[in-house]
Image (cartoon, rainbow, N blue to C red; front, side, top):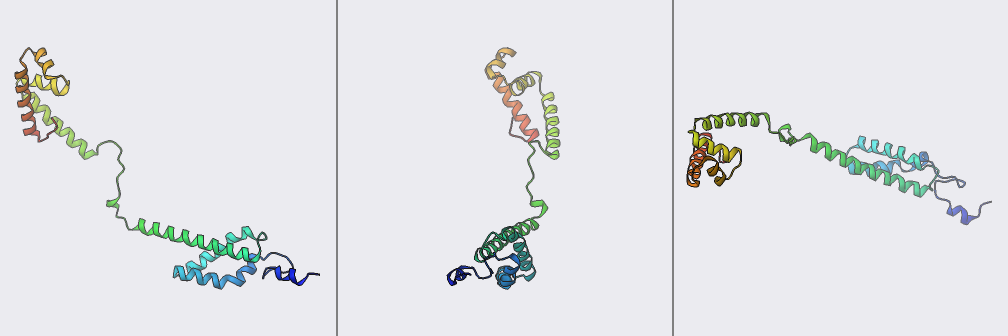
Length: 185
Protein backbone atom coordinates (compact mmCIF):
# COMPACT_ATOMS: atom_id res chain seq x y z
CA UNK A 1 0.00 0.00 0.00
CA UNK A 2 1.27 3.44 -0.93
CA UNK A 3 1.71 6.03 1.78
CA UNK A 4 0.12 9.50 1.39
CA UNK A 5 3.59 11.08 1.04
CA UNK A 6 4.51 8.77 -1.83
CA UNK A 7 1.13 9.34 -3.46
CA UNK A 8 1.71 13.15 -3.36
CA UNK A 9 5.15 12.67 -4.90
CA UNK A 10 3.65 10.97 -7.94
CA UNK A 11 3.41 13.58 -10.69
CA UNK A 12 -0.05 14.56 -11.84
CA UNK A 13 -0.94 12.55 -14.92
CA UNK A 14 0.89 9.47 -13.79
CA UNK A 15 -1.06 6.64 -12.29
CA UNK A 16 0.45 3.98 -10.09
CA UNK A 17 4.06 5.11 -10.86
CA UNK A 18 3.66 4.67 -14.63
CA UNK A 19 5.15 7.60 -16.59
CA UNK A 20 2.70 9.74 -18.54
CA UNK A 21 2.30 8.93 -22.24
CA UNK A 22 2.47 11.43 -25.07
CA UNK A 23 -1.20 10.71 -25.74
CA UNK A 24 -2.35 11.69 -22.24
CA UNK A 25 -0.04 14.71 -22.24
CA UNK A 26 -1.46 15.82 -25.59
CA UNK A 27 -5.01 15.56 -24.27
CA UNK A 28 -4.20 17.69 -21.25
CA UNK A 29 -1.98 20.35 -22.89
CA UNK A 30 -3.01 20.49 -26.56
CA UNK A 31 -5.22 23.58 -26.19
CA UNK A 32 -2.47 25.40 -24.27
CA UNK A 33 0.18 24.45 -26.85
CA UNK A 34 -2.06 25.60 -29.74
CA UNK A 35 -2.75 28.92 -27.98
CA UNK A 36 0.97 29.57 -27.53
CA UNK A 37 1.86 28.62 -31.10
CA UNK A 38 -1.12 30.48 -32.62
CA UNK A 39 -0.20 33.64 -30.72
CA UNK A 40 3.31 33.51 -32.18
CA UNK A 41 2.37 32.41 -35.70
CA UNK A 42 -0.97 34.17 -36.25
CA UNK A 43 -1.94 31.17 -38.37
CA UNK A 44 -3.96 28.31 -36.91
CA UNK A 45 -2.95 25.79 -39.56
CA UNK A 46 0.77 26.43 -39.07
CA UNK A 47 0.27 26.20 -35.29
CA UNK A 48 -1.50 22.85 -35.65
CA UNK A 49 1.25 21.55 -37.95
CA UNK A 50 3.99 22.56 -35.51
CA UNK A 51 2.08 21.04 -32.58
CA UNK A 52 1.74 17.76 -34.48
CA UNK A 53 5.46 17.77 -35.27
CA UNK A 54 6.24 18.50 -31.60
CA UNK A 55 4.19 15.48 -30.50
CA UNK A 56 5.93 13.28 -33.04
CA UNK A 57 9.36 14.37 -31.76
CA UNK A 58 8.23 14.00 -28.15
CA UNK A 59 7.55 10.29 -28.77
CA UNK A 60 11.32 9.70 -28.42
CA UNK A 61 11.07 10.66 -24.75
CA UNK A 62 7.93 8.69 -23.90
CA UNK A 63 8.42 6.49 -20.86
CA UNK A 64 11.66 8.22 -19.90
CA UNK A 65 10.32 11.36 -18.24
CA UNK A 66 7.83 12.28 -15.56
CA UNK A 67 4.72 14.24 -16.53
CA UNK A 68 6.25 17.65 -15.73
CA UNK A 69 9.49 16.80 -17.51
CA UNK A 70 7.56 15.55 -20.52
CA UNK A 71 5.49 18.77 -20.59
CA UNK A 72 8.63 20.94 -20.39
CA UNK A 73 10.20 18.86 -23.15
CA UNK A 74 7.09 19.28 -25.30
CA UNK A 75 7.16 23.06 -24.97
CA UNK A 76 10.95 23.17 -25.56
CA UNK A 77 10.50 21.13 -28.75
CA UNK A 78 7.66 23.43 -29.84
CA UNK A 79 9.83 26.49 -29.16
CA UNK A 80 12.67 25.03 -31.25
CA UNK A 81 10.26 24.17 -34.07
CA UNK A 82 8.91 27.71 -33.96
CA UNK A 83 12.45 29.12 -34.19
CA UNK A 84 13.19 26.88 -37.18
CA UNK A 85 9.89 27.89 -38.79
CA UNK A 86 10.73 31.60 -38.56
CA UNK A 87 14.28 31.04 -39.77
CA UNK A 88 13.10 29.14 -42.86
CA UNK A 89 10.36 31.65 -43.49
CA UNK A 90 12.87 34.56 -43.48
CA UNK A 91 15.10 32.66 -45.88
CA UNK A 92 12.21 31.91 -48.23
CA UNK A 93 10.97 35.51 -48.19
CA UNK A 94 14.45 36.91 -48.68
CA UNK A 95 15.13 34.48 -51.50
CA UNK A 96 11.86 35.10 -53.30
CA UNK A 97 12.32 38.87 -53.67
CA UNK A 98 15.73 38.98 -55.31
CA UNK A 99 15.54 39.82 -59.01
CA UNK A 100 17.70 37.59 -61.17
CA UNK A 101 19.61 40.63 -62.48
CA UNK A 102 20.73 41.50 -58.95
CA UNK A 103 22.36 38.15 -58.30
CA UNK A 104 26.12 38.21 -58.14
CA UNK A 105 27.89 36.54 -60.98
CA UNK A 106 30.56 34.09 -60.02
CA UNK A 107 33.96 35.22 -61.19
CA UNK A 108 35.53 32.43 -63.20
CA UNK A 109 38.81 34.29 -63.47
CA UNK A 110 38.33 34.53 -67.23
CA UNK A 111 37.12 37.64 -69.06
CA UNK A 112 33.56 37.65 -70.31
CA UNK A 113 32.94 36.95 -73.98
CA UNK A 114 32.23 40.63 -74.68
CA UNK A 115 35.38 41.75 -72.91
CA UNK A 116 37.47 39.14 -74.70
CA UNK A 117 36.08 40.24 -78.07
CA UNK A 118 36.76 43.92 -77.28
CA UNK A 119 40.32 43.00 -76.24
CA UNK A 120 40.91 41.12 -79.47
CA UNK A 121 39.62 44.09 -81.50
CA UNK A 122 41.81 46.49 -79.56
CA UNK A 123 44.83 44.23 -80.07
CA UNK A 124 44.17 44.11 -83.83
CA UNK A 125 44.01 47.94 -83.95
CA UNK A 126 47.24 48.16 -81.96
CA UNK A 127 48.93 45.72 -84.32
CA UNK A 128 47.94 47.90 -87.30
CA UNK A 129 49.29 51.00 -85.56
CA UNK A 130 52.62 49.33 -84.74
CA UNK A 131 53.01 47.94 -88.26
CA UNK A 132 52.41 51.42 -89.70
CA UNK A 133 55.26 52.94 -87.63
CA UNK A 134 58.64 53.69 -89.21
CA UNK A 135 61.08 50.77 -88.80
CA UNK A 136 63.27 52.29 -86.05
CA UNK A 137 60.26 53.46 -83.99
CA UNK A 138 58.56 50.07 -84.36
CA UNK A 139 61.74 48.24 -83.28
CA UNK A 140 62.16 50.48 -80.21
CA UNK A 141 58.51 50.04 -79.24
CA UNK A 142 58.54 46.23 -79.63
CA UNK A 143 61.82 45.85 -77.70
CA UNK A 144 60.46 48.02 -74.89
CA UNK A 145 56.85 46.92 -74.56
CA UNK A 146 56.93 43.35 -75.87
CA UNK A 147 60.40 42.15 -74.87
CA UNK A 148 60.71 44.35 -71.76
CA UNK A 149 64.19 45.73 -72.47
CA UNK A 150 65.36 48.90 -70.75
CA UNK A 151 66.03 52.04 -72.77
CA UNK A 152 69.80 51.60 -72.30
CA UNK A 153 69.62 48.00 -73.61
CA UNK A 154 67.57 49.14 -76.62
CA UNK A 155 70.08 51.94 -77.37
CA UNK A 156 72.98 49.44 -77.34
CA UNK A 157 71.13 46.83 -79.41
CA UNK A 158 69.94 49.34 -82.06
CA UNK A 159 73.14 51.40 -82.08
CA UNK A 160 71.33 54.68 -81.32
CA UNK A 161 71.56 57.16 -78.47
CA UNK A 162 69.47 56.93 -75.32
CA UNK A 163 67.78 60.23 -76.24
CA UNK A 164 66.75 58.81 -79.61
CA UNK A 165 65.28 55.71 -77.92
CA UNK A 166 63.29 57.93 -75.54
CA UNK A 167 62.08 60.09 -78.45
CA UNK A 168 60.97 57.07 -80.56
CA UNK A 169 59.27 55.49 -77.55
CA UNK A 170 57.44 58.70 -76.60
CA UNK A 171 56.11 59.20 -80.13
CA UNK A 172 55.10 55.52 -80.45
CA UNK A 173 53.22 55.61 -77.16
CA UNK A 174 51.50 58.87 -78.05
CA UNK A 175 50.38 57.38 -81.39
CA UNK A 176 49.01 54.26 -79.68
CA UNK A 177 47.13 56.26 -77.05
CA UNK A 178 45.69 58.62 -79.62
CA UNK A 179 44.44 55.87 -81.91
CA UNK A 180 43.47 53.16 -79.42
CA UNK A 181 42.47 55.44 -76.55
CA UNK A 182 44.06 53.35 -73.77
CA UNK A 183 46.49 54.62 -71.17
CA UNK A 184 48.01 51.21 -70.39
CA UNK A 185 50.95 51.52 -72.81
